[in-house]
Length: 352
Image 1 (cartoon, rainbow, N blue to C red):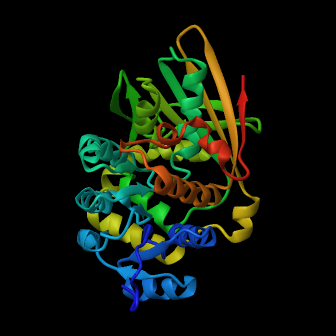
Image 2: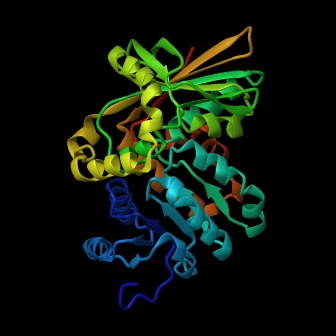
């Protein structure tokens, strides 16, 4: 804790010196949110705290319960989230602190959803996925369900621009040996990587797309109750073919030494998008729902994915600070499908 810190904090951002965490911390401070920055690395935490003129706290995730007594909301920006969510959720349950994160990791959504009753008993909100993963797609899922309440199949997808950060790549590497996932008859099932390919008009003409194990395979079910869900992303044809070939290399990629080497390379050589790329980039989000007879399609255009994450995560934290729901929530369930339209630069819903 920074010397002289003697005021109650409202929002603690863990992993605040990472690429996305730092952008969110800057935005929260700019909006006047009472903020404390936190992370494992004391030097980096203190440096960021001094630059933003806010308190800083350095601690390991399994020590979090000792640092949350004066915190209303914890926003976890430290990935891979499969390694950080559990001790932070436990600490939030113990201290009565609302938990938010920016994960896109399907297994994390499922695990946090199982803590719903504990969160209700503790009087806190568990709200993962308040970044690009999964705010636009989750809100689009809610909108499509409102348009066709009897839908029993849902397909979502996105066509992004730009690059990825070290943290996002670390999360991808952590799960790259797990293959594909879809929801069928209410259950998440394993499928081959990129098991389905199709041409989709995300909003700027038809693009080659493949299925991916995106977080909405989990969250869209809790938002809508629809039992059959697939998620697609736009990729060049050659990339789609390479993803299919990765089925044969997945066992090797899952070996701890290989994973550790890839994580080290990601941390050493990968940077997130520049400020200009964040300002100029865009993402096109598409979805369709069907009941077997009627099909409805809707689209949303958002800013670049990291720019949207900064806005959506900060806005979600502000709303939970003002009037936090209780229990496990998805973004659209907590704030309504229109939440994404309240964010800067978002255009939609474009319905067919």
